[in-house]
Image (tube, rainbow, N blue to C red; front, side, top):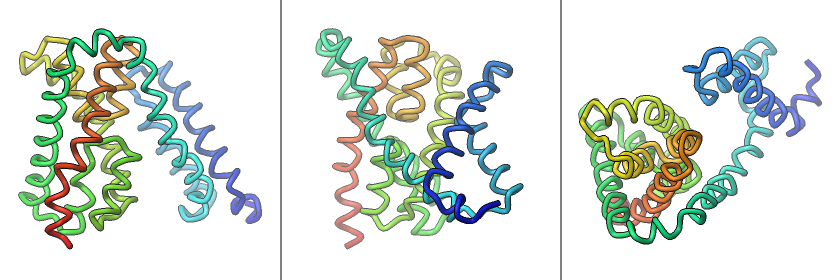
Length: 229
């Protein structure tokens, strides 16, 4: 393959968008196949078949990563549409998001310690329950690997969006508000986007929970950061 073409940022960007488009088509055929699982696999196959290094692909892939922030902000639209209902539920939503943030950090740290993870892995895994754009910055702040954090955060969101709703029903959580707060706190933007595709109100509640967790999590991590210095 032409090296000049591969080195151009347009290559990585085009490959990422094309893989996601193909993943959406695959989802029409197999509804259980999440696009965020299929798209990276398609990119991986193309890179392997073309003998293209991840470093070369990343030049364009980073341009896509840049838009994570604006895409996350766009989730404020359903929040605006349901602002009056959110206002009435504000104390419950904030309490649920705070508890979700605290438990998320506790479970993340406990899992790494129990399974014998290294200290650098712990720093990368701690913020994986918040949205990717924020998790990457928190990982850098703690001295973790942003690339590893991004992979763990996306995996957490995928697992949470697929397994979260049935797991909550299995645990007897049938209240839509409680379920939305839990999904937003545990599966961040990916879980919220899944709920948004089914119900704008639930997506808005989940998005609010996700946003609140991005405020609570750095505050809860302050003692950890002070201890690391």
